[in-house]
Image (tube, rainbow, N blue to C red; front, side):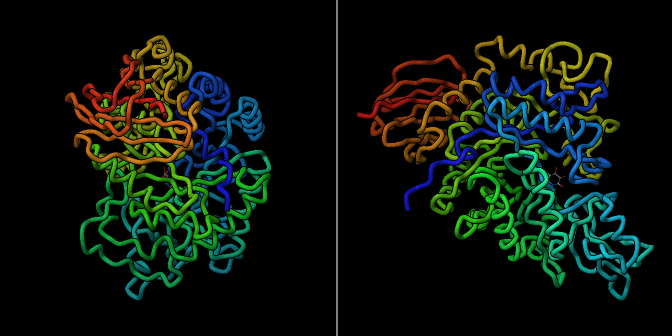
Amino acid sequence: MAPQEPAWWQREIIYQIYPRSFQDSDGDGVGDLPGIIQRLEYLAETLGVDAIWLSPFYPSPMADFGYDISNYVDVDPLFGTLETFDELVREAHARNLKVIIDFVPNHSSEQHPWFLESRSSRDNAKRDWYTWADAKPDGSTPNNWLGMFGGSAWTWDEATGQYYFHSYLKEEPDLNWRNPEVKEAMFDVMRFWLERGVDGFRIDAVLHIMKDPALRDNPVNPGERIVLGNPPLPEYDAQLHLHDQAHSDIHGIFREMRHLLDSYGEERSRMCIGELDIFEWPTWASYYGAALDELHMPFNFGLLRVPWTAQAVRGVVDALEAALPPEAWPNFVLGNHDVSRIASRVGNAQARVAMMLLLTLRGTPTLYYGDEIGMIDVPITPDQILDPLQQWAPELGRDPARTPMQWDSGPNAQFCLPGATPWLPIAEDYRRVNVAAEREDPRSMLVLTQALIAARRASPALFGGAYRSMDNVPPACLVYVRETKDERRVIALNFSSTDQTVALPELGRGRITMSTVLDRREPVNLAKLHLHPNEGCLVTVALV
Ligand code: NOJ
């Protein structure tokens, strides 16, 4: 079978927007959809990304900042209206930006009318839309399943005398996808947004939608602690999550979702990328589907918590490449709204190396807002904590990576009006680290990111070519080749703060077209490539 032409989501770069934090247009200190519309030009023209993914903007009590949804088919007034959403899609498409939205199928808000009905009585028609179970004879929970945000995953409902299940907060009861009415209602939600023109979905907590119907206990994790999250969740990770998620029936649901998406427009024109936290690559790869008929891509979180060494990073990329079914398309990400920012995890100098890595690997890159200017985690004082996870365990909190985008050096970094109070504090470094200042600085992180995006777009080897990593390089370096039959790029990354020399005579001669410090463009013989501390180089090799 001839290989298919790449779909848009295989060639393009996705940019994640956390709507609360991108741009406030109405002075309430919370970002909104009109604010995003104002910034589309920045995304399309200045930065040059191709698609935006919007974290949830739906009506929500905001117990989990929008992942607790009380109406799947509307916009929270905090962010705008359905009309604003339509305008956003129109404006984005006019700039050739695709729009991906967050779809949260696993749970609703406890305030969703479906759950209000479900909990109203045991014989309500929607009782079975959620997972209810009796207490054990001693009154304890039906099994040992745990919530990812701490404590039992079961909450007792006094009025109806049963427990309900929630994979996350008790304010986020899990829907029962084994009930065909639920499945159809959620597929209708997908249809609703597809008909409004969205190009794809990032599907939240996608593995959680199918659990063991017999509700068997999870076994204790006997061996090495398997760290599922970043940062780790010690109590949760002490169990093997064999029964509370990822039941094998999930593959059937994914195939149905895929069929639904493929029925809109041309095949593969609408996509889905599923959020799952798996680092065992063959299992991870199984969610593409045996016939590549399930998720277009399972999100790959390998770079989010790999120890930041050349060998460990190579290990992740190579293992993932080896596990991929033929024709399955990989993806990479350095950050998101749930983890510490890359510049805080690895430092500013290595964040530049990381950006070169992200934008030169084989696979769709997703860029987290603000990483392109080197934003760091912002310290949150105890009285500023908003994230429910952080309230429960301060060291796990996600507020530091969700702070307002830094647009310029004026009041409130131009995220919101001068008199407004931003919902989370703005980084102290914003007068220096911001879009306007970095646009003027020829060696800024923003200029590096722009240059890498432009280089990727212009090079079939970078956006679509093969990948192979090189042996016989210094342990502190990762060197890989991206190539098509017509062009070859070599990427050499120094993960250390000392000088390194790479000697790969077999790769021939070429030209350094970009370094992460943006200070080198020169001919090079790969028999002796000198790398400065914390430097990455992109080399164009002449093919003879
Ligand atoms: C994963 C989301 O990324 C996270 O922010 C959220 O809290 C949980 N899923 C629950 O929806």
